[in-house]
Length: 177
Image (cartoon, rainbow, N blue to C red; front, top):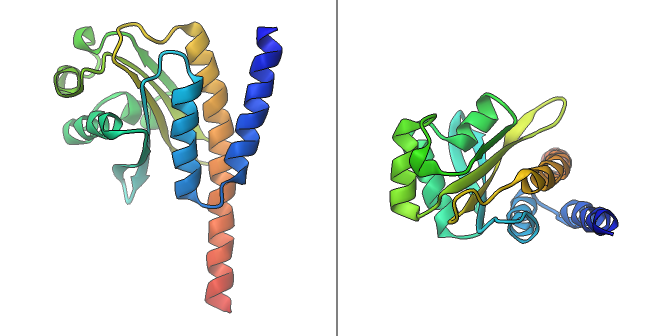
């Protein structure tokens, strides 16, 4: 059935993300999995805040980075809203969107991206960033795509928190040695 196939797919996703050794490797694997797993996704990236400034440490391609740069330049957009306001944003036609007026039209003009799904990557204790999924098609993401992305974002946040903790412990051990 579709459900057992999805369960098997996410079991494999959890193992793949947990197998990565560094934050950078985990994030890069995440965006590749997102593009392959979420229906309608053509491009994927991750936004993190470093010293209060957003950046894109992992992306499937230049388009993801370009959309993210428009958000960072204008100070608004779905990934920033996902980090700061609510866990998920889905936009089917950026050209017609009014929520982020400084971002929406320039993003479409520069990248031809029309649909966005953005998810906060978070645990009970921390917001780690945002997973940003982009499509060249209008209304590319339906309820099923959003649900699959929600499951992926939860797996990703846990894997990311785990690898960050592992890197911090390793750094402390090296500093003591």
